[in-house]
Length: 351
Image (tube, rainbow, N blue to C red; front, side, top):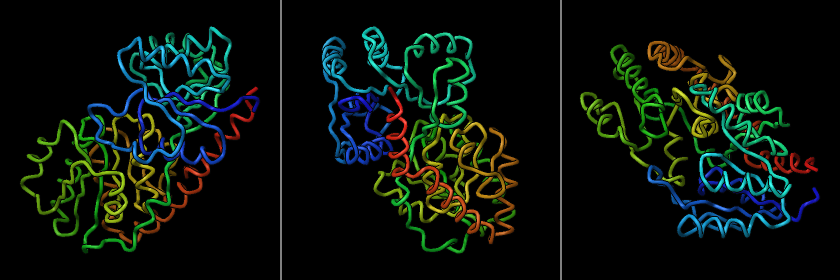
């Protein structure tokens, strides 16, 4: 690697990115330029965990771009983790115009309106030295539309944080757990419909944990009011508290209608839960081997989701076997330590 260091431009300090950058800081000279500290729909407060060299862009747009340009002038390798912010676009144009070496790191593009995105992204990324696709589907799609050398590099998780489970069915029930935003795209209504179906036949044998907040919070509260004794709604939970709650879950539900990756699914698998997710979730297609370490279902299909939930209720011995396999697979393929080494290997090949 013939660079003085690595600079990453990303939107804000999310737990999984901060953890990765902290690990990388022990291996190479890394600096992270964060566009913002948080977003209105996020309640993360992960700034205090940053242990790597970093800056936050501040002030009005012009001042932010002037500050950003100072970092872009440095003789370093750059990774740009998105194309949906002015700072990302400015960096691509600036670095390309000065023949500097930069990589793009992004999630899978939604199929909707792909014709327009295909043209736009092809133009934006044509000067990237390489693309880091967040998952196999993302990498394949980016390569098809850009013909730029592409590597599979998803978000990774600190699997050691989620090694808290000591028993299954701690309350003598099968505990289904969802973690994520309470928005329609995440499939929260499919979870509620499926749980209502199975509850009719397994009323005293099932329990649902819902972790997260969002615009549908009140709707979810109203929906579960008739069976609140069988559901616990946690609201927003800090990253520090997640492992203890995950330890209560037996089956992780993540029936997202669309998710470029889905870090929560990898976390749930690391916590030894048997996962049920959708083929429209990037992490599911990369990490779940259907029938072996989890199940994959079509999106917006609560009936089939309920069928797999029933299968695990009727054969509870499967839950621990599948959960152990899920945990082992994520530790082998998605652990943050291995992710850091993989990224170092990738950038070592960049000329």
